[in-house]
Image (cartoon, rainbow, N blue to C red; front, side):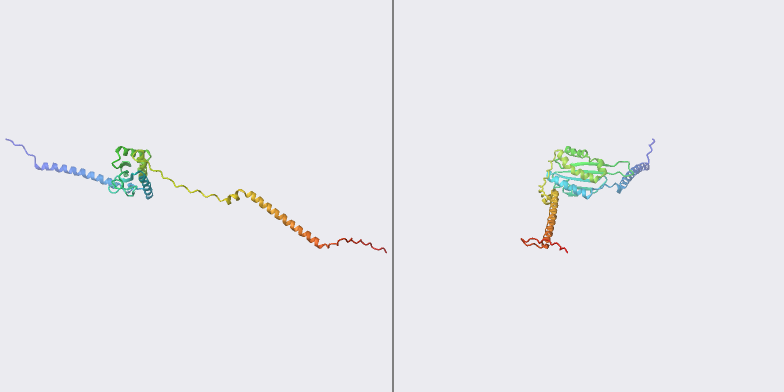
Length: 265
């Protein structure tokens, strides 16, 4: 009876080796693509953080709102390709202090932004992903309403792409207003201004000279003319007295002597 020929064992081993080589080639290609994408994300695609002045001003505003409303507010800016610490984080508790899972903040709201900058060799476009998160007492609907409010107030994805640092701090200071609009927080108390001290009265001396300078000038002119006339009168009086003293006084009752006529020869 004829027997069937068996497939050599070496053929099966060759097929398995070919499959392993194929999978290994695919893994190498995919790994190369990932490495190339990471390497192409060079320094010019780094997400800029807000400057110190922007962070300090934002912390001060959030601190006043949190004290009045009883809600902690914060921000977090991250790089889409970042695997470490966020680019910038802060809250009403200070720069670098997050509100999420913070024991000092039982109620909190935070705007989180992930910015994606595509490399020059990539065909994809830059983009930003905004997400508003909060403590458990805020519902998903309320958080979504606050998130949509940012876009309505002009802090859109394009703004986050153009200037992420400024945009994330701007969005953070809008959280208290949007929380009131969503009905999850009370309006912040309006600070009362201290009563201004009454302004001092103007100097009366200055007003006297300014309002009556014409009268004063006329009075000074009259005084000058009067002094001149008095001086002229005194001088003339002295001259008259001097003339009277120079002429000898005649005796009382004596007739003046008749004038003598010359004798004829």
